[in-house]
Image (cartoon, rainbow, N blue to C red; front, side, top):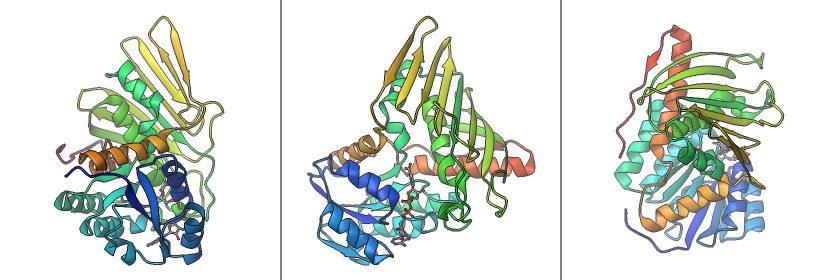
Length: 332
Ligand SMILES: NC(=O)c1ccc[n+]([C@@H]2O[C@H](COP(=O)([O-])OP(=O)(O)OC[C@H]3O[C@@H](n4cnc5c(N)ncnc54)[C@H](O)[C@@H]3O)[C@@H](O)[C@H]2O)c1
């Protein structure tokens, strides 16, 4: 992975909600330049070109993949398209910002990881929660927590939401649960080795997709996590995202969409409050730095694979009523 000189031209594939969040962040980062846009719906790509500037809009990714002026592609499409687009981007030699979940199955995640390794592109999985300063402070304050409690509890997703579609999205647990699994691992500091779970379809009636999950995880360092994921309703103050870590008499509570962190050392408590969610901006700054320095970003394809593998193993554990061992690829 060679060092490269910014600014870097960015191509966006999938001009929807999360792409707008990325572009709002990119506009504050001088080294990243919005350059080209692709969406199956041409009018969406055109409206992005008008709103964020650049050179052209397209309805298929081919032009962006073949364009030597583009350094990096942001893949911000529905989940059933992640694998072919990610592999094509790697094969085209583009650095990749891949929206979560990396893919819906471990086999697909592996295929993407192999493409990223083969082509030696800078490949980032978009786990924006990790980049929030209150989260990073938790790692410093409590690096070896005995317990992590990770909760992502959303308001009920509409039945016709694309992410509830079994093929396009995989349902709320596979869609947003990867954030919870990734955060449980990050706050703990090591890989998971075993998982047990209960799950089911609790908040929707017209679908088979799993929308609710509770899991118990054991990590390589012997510590534990409990994870709850669903769309049965958010909790005031805690918000959709709530994480706790406890160990050695210390504790951390991260909540209010990760704008607040409470750090208790057993005697006194420190509160850190941020005016806004900073994860998306800091994630994009990390992508820029990783490209410029020719290094792996803090969240790569392996992290994406790990999160999907944990959810798939949790589903198997619930189905078989047997704890599942996790076997992950070696760290690189
Ligand atoms: N990091 C986060 O916290 C976060 C939050 C929301 C969504 N996401 C992820 O971002 C991705 C997109 O979600 P969204 O909410 O922006 O969806 P969206 O429906 O708002 O936008 C997706 C866009 O992709 C386009 N598209 C689909 N297939 C395409 C293809 N083959 N080529 C080109 N365009 C295509 C659609 O037409 C649509 O405009 C998903 O992976 C989702 O899980 C991440």
